Image (cartoon, rainbow, N blue to C red):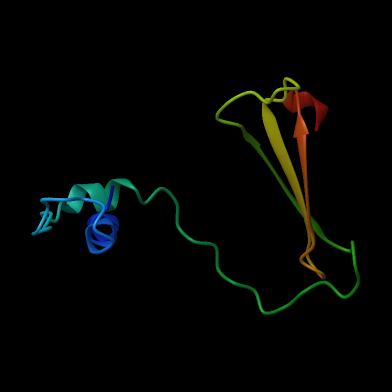
Length: 93
């Protein structure tokens, strides 16, 4: 839990007896959470719907009730509309 969240809970009086909230800064905590560099933003978009579709597949943290283990997303570059699907096997994508 972050220091900011603790302060909010304290302001809402959900943490009785906690008066001073000050957590030390640990640089390795911040740098270890930086997994990837950000992608550069592009000012251009495709001209028509479905000219360019971005997709991504990732594993769900838990299996769904129907047995799906993966998410797949499709994002239309022009409209930014997104479709999400659950799939049981990565090969089903």
